[in-house]
Amino acid sequence: MELVKEIFQHLNGWGLTAILFIVGILEFSFGLYKKWKLNDKLVDLASILFGKLLMPVLVSYFALQLLPKVAPEYKEIFNWVPFWWGFFIICIADDLTQYWYHRLHHEIPWLWKFHRTHHSAPYMGMAMASRQGFFYTLLFPQTYVTTTLVFLGLGVPALIARGVKGLITMMAHSSIKWDKPFYDNKWLHPIAWVMERTISTPATHHAHHAAHDRDGIGHYNGNYGNMFFLWDVIFGTAKITRQYPEEYGLEEYQDDSWYSQVLYPLVKSDKPGSELAE
Image 1 (cartoon, rainbow, N blue to C red):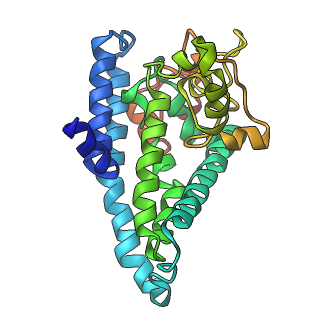
Image 2: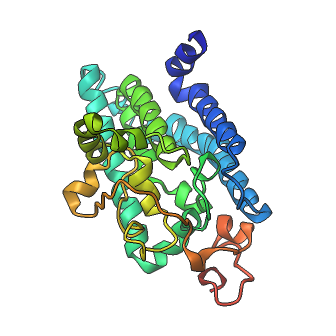
């Protein structure tokens, strides 16, 4: 219990990474990476390394060098805001920004090329939770919105909000269907009804990663929410079935080389007919 307490106390630091590895090991133990080819391993690994190693350096530069030079007079101008109001502001600003960034990458063809890497994995799990193209991650607007709000004085609320969001997002990508008991037990249905319309769960987010929509479950052009599924409910992109797709990864988007999936358009694909070869 002490270890669990320590993990959640440091959720936005090493705690989130610890949860990622613990759940990942459980998934691997249950044989949930049977379709994990070498090419997919390299895509996942490259994405994780970029997200965990390079992005913090870039964000630190933005926070510690650029903002103080551009707007020094606004540093900690919002430090009077109470914690819970700050938490609310961070959650809305960060997650709503990501919802629209994510949605636009599905709806605008040339932007889709930068995001499709996330939909090429034929499996769900911790390994692919951070699977993204270099430029998609680099230009995450919510990262810079939240960093700016931290600079303006909402540092503590941001620390907690980012930790909670990271946990929800990772567990929505997990192959462990932790939400299933809420659907299988009638006495939990009222909780399930609220939960699945508020935050992302495996059922709703797995549908977003389905290989197709022929089964009536897949909904890859919808269910865009990361922390809050509420945005999908509000903006009409939600599909709730309480079921899970049998196949993952858009069928026509697999087998591009790992380096083209991560580094497009700096590196093009050598797969004939691929969008990433253009």
